[in-house]
Image 1 (cartoon, each protein chain N blue to C red):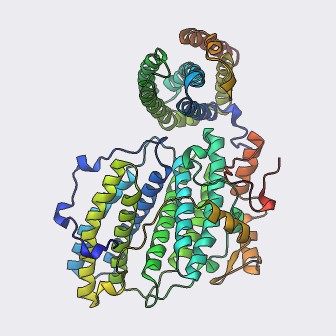
Image 2 (cartoon, rainbow over the protein chains, first blue to last red):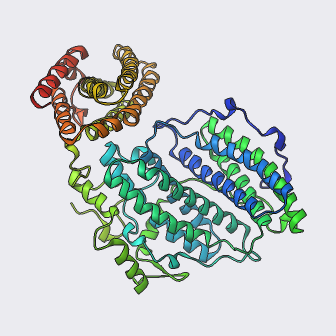
Image 3 (tube, chains in turn red, purple):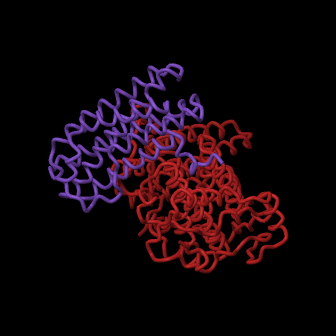
Amino acid sequence: MGFNPLDHQGIPLDRQLRNWRELDVEPVDPDHGDPYTKCRIIAMNGIEVEAILFSHQFARHCPDPDVKRQLAQVRYIEQQQQKVVNWLLPGLASVLETTISYEQVAVDLTGWIARHEPDPYLKQAYEFGVLEDFDHLYRYANLYEMIEHRKAESIVDGLTEVMPGRPTKFHHRHPADNVREPYDRSTVNPLSRLHALTIMAAEQQTMNFYMNVGPQYMEPIARRLYQEIGLIEEEHVTHYESLVDPGESWWEQLVTHEYNECYLYHSFMEQEPDPKVKAVWELHLNMELEHLRIACDLMRRHDGREPREILAPELPNVLTFEENKQFVRGLLDTQMDLTTLGTGYVRDAHERFEKMQEQIHGGEEPPSEQVMAQHREMFGREYRVETEGEHPDAALRERS
Amino acid sequence: MAGIAASDADVVALLMRQHGEIRNLFDRVEGTAGDERRAAFRELVRLLAVHETAEEEVIRPFTRTSVPDGGKVADERLAEEREAKELLSRLDGMDADDPKFLPELRTLRLDVMRHARAEERYEFNHVRRHADKARLASMATALRAAEAVAPTRPHPGTESAAKNLTLGPVTALVDRTRDAVRKAMGKDG
């Protein structure tokens, strides 16, 4: 029998506030420990940021002062949760190191979700995205070696390969072609709702992160690469957010957010080897159970509907950070040359795509190509981690 | 073009790469045992000595004289270095297979990293802001002179620990590094 968050009682809201001492968590070690612990921290931070931003948008559209106050109370606790989760990251890590962990999250979280998504159209959307995040990881890893003389394998630890995906320069599509079809809220599998929300939140946080840290770099190539990949994160957020049915009511969306937070804290608690981090996941799960109860009450009162109608009878299988190497290699073999047209996918570079490419590149190689050229000039080779053999696509094998 | 590839003439880029190499060496010491670990540790001690001496001789004086409030910045870095040096000398007298060696090494690693990040965030950015290209280049030349005193080898697995010791004690190495840097600074700076 699985875990049903609707059947468990959490910590009462008026006992959830933490003082400065409790907020002052000890960060994880920058160089030791499971790389996926950092991935879970980064993913969960994205989830909390989404919870906060969603709640603010809700409040701005909500005329009822009592509901506004209720939202404000829960949101303040969510801000504390975000502070605790994100402050588990070590100050000793450089921005680029954290960036590489962000891309490892993007590859292995999206990879896992693509493998487990029941709806074929949604599955294709995740598969499409994985190959782009995978290529970003490769570009940043090369930049990292140039600036810090460290290899990205010291961060990803052989769990995720580092080699070319769909080349970053081809990710710049006409914005209209980034909008997908939404799922239908009346027939969708409850698991699909959670997947869409999770990936949207993760990509949104990545977008926000690059928007803000990119200009902290002094090296011209670093500044330019963050600009380029930052713009692709905008495309990814557009891509994933359009999968969500816009007909879901605010109350329904609130319940889904809180349920998803229960699901993810529960999942991460089940797999976390670091005891101090695990204690955070467990505590936050117990807080989220109460946030979910409050959201369900609001939905019943204001939407006149029973939350169980839209939720799964129990939590789905634990969402797991694990290797997706063979899955990614399969995509490299079959989906490299895809792009989007309207809400679908095509293999040919169509007119609107070509026009966008021409305009944004302005007749030059983009930063994602320049970084590779500069790396080759400096080291006489590229940086890659190919633990499972040579690249599946013969055209992308390294020429020496 | 002012890419990183062309920045061998930028002392800050060189120092940041040395920070990476120091961390790589910590990885090697932690990942080996016996003679191999002793050899990797000698290498680490050597690189740390050369790197810190060069920073004291090349960067700190510039920070003191050319960066606003640079005296305080330099003092804070020196205090961090002193702490790391004390820990390093304790480790230096310990056998690499001693069960207490790795925990102490881990503490040293965090101290060294904290110091390196503080330099990158609170000192090097000022150096880049206040030094012109020629000055960054002349400081880079001095740093390379220091590296030449005790070149690090990327794959020292084959050499014996005894052979490594022939470089002499750390203090002598520090002296030689200082002489080399001063000579280079006199010529170029």
